[in-house]
Each structure stands twice: as C-alpha cells, then as structure tokens.
Image (cartoon, rainbow, N blue to C red; front, side):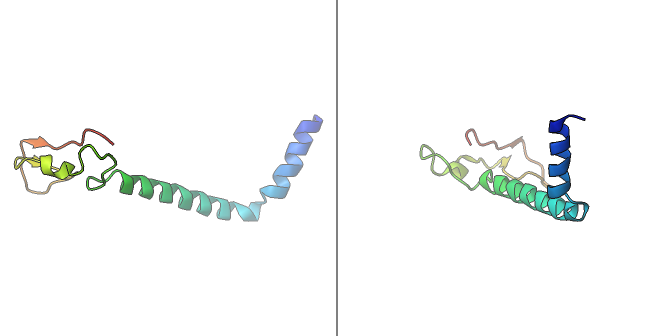
Amino acid sequence: MSAAQSAFRRNLKHWFAVEAIPIYVIMGGAVTGAGWYLTRLARAPHVVWSRENSTPWNTIGPNQSPKMFNVNQEFESKWNRKLL
C-alpha cells in the first residue's frame, strides 16, 4: 500500500466514522431538498425574471391552461412561458 493510500484511509477513518454516516445522509438529503424547492419556487409561473414582459400571465388565452395537471378539464393547448 502506498503512502497516499494509507493517508487516504487514515483520513477516511477520521472524518467518515460509521456513526456519522446518518448525519451525512440526512444533511445531504436536506440540502438536496432545499435546492429542489428553491428551484421549484424560482421556476413558478407567477415569478417574473425579466422586465421586458412584466405581466406574462396576461398572455394566457381562455383556451390555454397554465397548470401542470388539470383534473376533469379539457383545453386546446398548454401555455408555455418563453423565457426563464
């Protein structure tokens, strides 16, 4: 075993103890969930990022649906925001 491998194993035993693995998993899941939620909030249809079209919801026609999932409703087309 080389010196780099033995140093890596010593460091691995010091920082990644078996009893600390649940904390790493929980924190990784929390950070991933928070990142997903913030991305979801930023991409919502009511959030406006550009000043060119400050009211994009006014371009939705009566035969278009801005919703991701429609229950018992029929629309001719689905509305899409051009920019994000």
